[in-house]
Length: 316
Ligand code: SF4
Image (cartoon, rainbow, N blue to C red):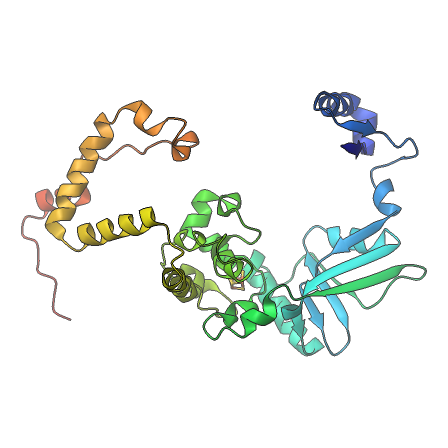
């Protein structure tokens, strides 16, 4: 493989050893490294080629491409090279500039809790002497629009509020989803691209509904996650092991006495379980995680000991 090594100006001037280490590492990996001598600064390759952006909205009334960022990176990509390529999903098209005002406020408020992003850039054509190409991407969106139960996901404005509130996302991080779009919105979008590949994604949710509560465009996210689970079941896409685990969980959680026995047994088991049973090469789970230490007393036990006269649950 041949790779062009581009050394940013600050590495060139202040940290040349980083460039040397990178070069040596690539060479050791068998890469054929090319060092274009004409580069004079980090922006040089980009300034000579093309810059790519997405778009948060496209205004049908004026043809304006609107990109909201907090770093100004879209402006650099659009304004420095001689070619600006904008790739945007067809669901991002909104009717008028008036509606843009609403959406921009909605986006900033839900994404960063502010009234507007640091940069809200509008591109209505190429710069003088430059070129601009806009690619309108369908990639399954039209098909999703025809799904009565799931088309609402097309309303998403990518504010990420659903991710920031999701307990699974907050604990596991975006990469754990193994998909381009992550978090609750990723869970309901990805299967429309490839149903079989993402058949396990729907279980990365507790269905607590927090995502639905915060969504500014009112997508019924947790209802859709549940709906997709049903679709997976109907299409026989759920693994046998998971189905069996669910059946056992159903049994245990529907019988209080069984639940009490299970929690007590599990606490004891966690204390005596041999180290190798969890941390071995066959168990990917244990590779990066620690089994939590069980509390000496469960809440059930504490309640029994401290509140002997447990009140009956009042009738609704
Ligand atoms: S689903 Fe709603 S909350 Fe989540 S990113 Fe999209 S618009 Fe934001």
